Image (cartoon, rainbow, N blue to C red):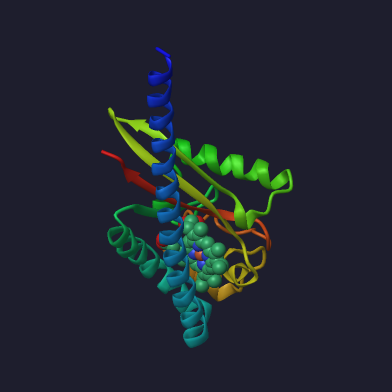
Length: 186
Ligand code: HEC
């Protein structure tokens, strides 16, 4: 009987921790949905209105701005990263690189790219941080600016804005990168 109480306390604690992370995962997923939806809508409108060269400008200015807006609305930090990044602002950190590499392994093992996700609670600077990542599949429309063959005017505009662009050569179904959500738990 003596060790049942501590065991129960431990169980309650672990259930509670798990429940907390489950809530954060749900919140992170809905923040990503909002971010992705807004990005896609902006991209589609810009492509239809002014073509891909004009749409590059939208990605360039709107993507970071939408990320910021959704982040502050949800009390979580949202960003996009890639092993082959276009913007120097989207270089993955060490743990993000490790997760992106794991996603590639899981994809190679047959998992659906659209449902690749990962989460953990990590210790950082004496505090706790919730971390969530979700893979971004490369769709047909993405190839205009991230594909193997890119129109000369698009190529020129990309080179002007992103001299260190590494985000070309993708095919449909590839992992283009991932959404990252972090939240301090202190
Ligand atoms: C009109 C050109 C264009 C199209 C089409 C486009 N992108 Fe991009 N993409 C960009 C630009 C420009 C950036 C850099 C944005 C920045 O400066 O933050 C970018 C950045 C990204 C990033 C962030 C990582 C990085 O490489 O910097 C991801 C992820 C991404 N795009 C995914 C997609 C997906 C998925 C699609 C299709 C749904 C898509 N893109 C379609 C131009 C485009």
